[in-house]
Image (cartoon, rainbow, N blue to C red; front, top):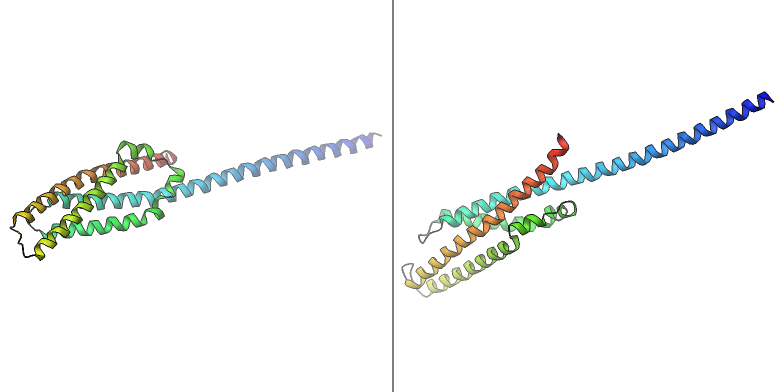
Length: 198
């Protein structure tokens, strides 16, 4: 009978040990799965943030070059300044085309709405679009007038140039908002990740 009790006690002890081992292994696997999910999400966030910061910095550089060109515009034709403006415009357009690939995933993990509102980015973008559209119209009008034989010294062409210079100054101010917002977004993303590497 004593042997029977020992066998039963040993069996119960083994079953209890196996039960606790199974529970411990299950909990360990759940913890490992959650840790792996967090690790994957963190790695994705870093990758997305890296793409976004690179795009933001490239945009800042492009807008800065465009802003400098806008400030340097004058009634005197300067092909270097015009070339700088055109190159930055083409680069800005290419950046715009890359936006979905570089930024759309960013909004899944990060909220930039406060920064966008703070810097009035929608209004700024509308002003930029308005200024560039009006500059295009002024350029077409100048080409039309020159096609009619009017020279650079003509009163109408000079008036168009003065209007264009005003639009370039307006464009420069609107680009300021974009540059400031992008800089703040970069700063926010960097501070978000600095806390993980301390």
